[in-house]
Length: 272
Ligand SMILES: Nc1ncnc2c1ncn2[C@@H]1O[C@H](COP(=O)(O)OP(=O)(O)OP(=O)(O)O)[C@@H](O)[C@H]1O
Ligand SMILES: [Mg+2]
Image (cartoon, rainbow, N blue to C red; front, side):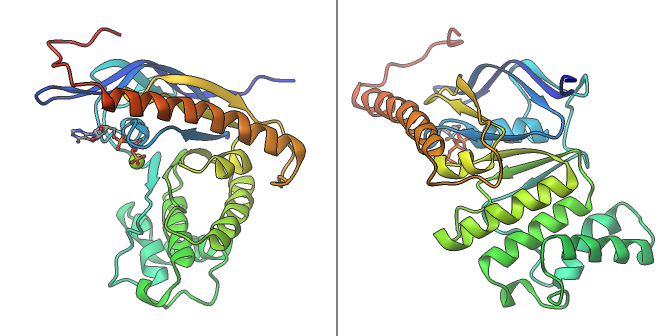
């Protein structure tokens, strides 16, 4: 069996937000991400998940350490990494088709080619027939599909998803998870998916990276070997869920204890 290629290397990553006192969001994170994998990131609220995603997107610079995409340091955002956010960020004045066309227009792709590509992504996310509707005419799940189609239309190497389904009701969320698995298996993109929801992470991920409470360190990386589509009621699924929830509970307890202690002012650099 051939080993998967590493697409992204995170080495000794540390991110401090300046201020008084400075806030250490990420501490000494080492993680390799494989080409084509679906990696989920979970961690207590406010620990640094979005910050990690933003560093990969090139929207935040590491304070220390490095992040290498195919061996090259990430110097800023690029069309090879596209983010999908929790809140829909569609252009309200553009139709579904207009939104999906956006990235293609930026790339300067000729209109007929762009139309063809946009329509194929709209089909892929199951929105055929809705091309000419505006975001306000769509359900939350449909809007997130448009956001996914728009991201895919840029043909990125990596899709960076920050709790994209957390605003949806449970039923729509499960449905979108199934759809996302189909889309991922058809496109073969590398996906980094941040979620609060452990069940979602186990349903979707090849691996789950579990972060500690702030500063976020990498506490564990758990491989999910279960065949897809995954049975949420299966024994192994339930056991994995309990395992990850157990780790998160420990981290949340640490967070609560930390908050009960008086704040000690931090001077200079915080030791790793
Ligand atoms: N631009 C910034 N400037 C200063 N502090 C920031 C900035 N961005 C994030 N932080 C802080 O860094 C920490 C981690 O934030 P981040 O948004 O990455 O957490 P998260 O795990 O995504 O949280 P949530 O679970 O609520 O989405 C928080 O304490 C936050 O206040
Ligand atoms: Mg976040």
